[in-house]
Image (cartoon, rainbow, N blue to C red):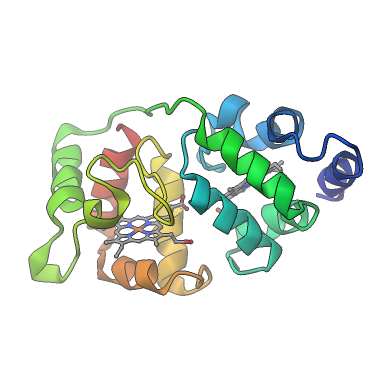
Length: 194
Ligand code: HEC
Ligand code: HEC
């Protein structure tokens, strides 16, 4: 971890600190993949993510607003080294990268996930995810893109919204509390393949 923080410190002290594309390829790509197309569910994909959401998350990590353990271990130190101009440049870079979709899962599970995403589960008080995350899950403004994201990352986020360690977004925490484990699995499986 300290090696990573040290690399960032070196970078941000250089004149190229605001060059998001270069910082992305030299540092962020080690975890988030080339052009943000992460290959491991440990690390969220960043390609084609909403600019405003990326800015909010990077500033949020800097302010320790996301308290889940993976954010603490990986992103707090990195974000602490990024100034506002660098954050803006990184967000601009990632938002322009081509989106990619992940592997499809069990057909019945995906059909159930699509239903939850598009219509919600009125009986259980689950709102349609599409009403905030966009009809295709492409995100917009403060609402993150979910289409193509690793299912296991999505499930982990639903879990940390539920257990309160990712407590910066009361609206999404409320939504997460309505989701049972099977519902979460279905919608995450569907989203990964989009
Ligand atoms: C050592 C690995 C590592 C490096 C290097 C790294 N990250 Fe991360 N990043 C993570 C992990 C792990 C998470 C997920 C945290 C969680 O699950 O809460 C994350 C989460 C994020 C998120 C939140 C995404 C979302 O969908 O909410 C953003 C934005 C982000 N990183 C940007 C960056 C940028 C920009 C860089 C380079 C300056 C970078 N990261 C470098 C490991 C890393
Ligand atoms: C009322 C609006 C709203 C609805 C409905 C909603 N969300 Fe969200 N969601 C948000 C907001 C806002 C965020 C960003 C939170 C933040 O800024 O950290 C978010 C974040 C997320 C994240 C974290 C993404 C990341 O990259 O870390 C996941 C996963 C998620 N939502 C899944 C869902 C699912 C699944 C549904 C449907 C069951 C849903 N959301 C419905 C508003 C909503």
